Length: 173
Image (cartoon, rainbow, N blue to C red; front, top):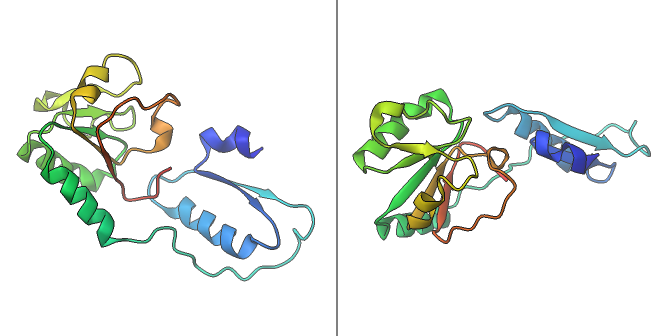
């Protein structure tokens, strides 16, 4: 069941009496994050009637080392390319200003369509997994993903050599 539901859920987890206290709170936190979506619970039949005491478990840790690494890549970047996914509405205006300020060409995913106005001069097209956008991705020396979820990308090999920096307000795969 987990393999079948993986493409259409944010997570699919097997819950056992041994892991329930950790797995259930993490999955419920994932459900509540921006871009709501389903989480599948596959409950083990033995012990499924036992009560658990859920303790909040952080999904992500914020680390300055990741920020420093991204800043180092960005500082040497001469031909960046942005890929914009399904952002929260309040992030759109800030992102638009950033991309305009640094004159960064942009591809949008299907969920990100409209996050950048088509007439802005920065929208280079849509990331569809076709050969259309391949020259742009190959030419980039840094690819910035803004709010792109792995479910927005086709399950094909990523054949681009530029470093990728992914920024999102939620956990991505």
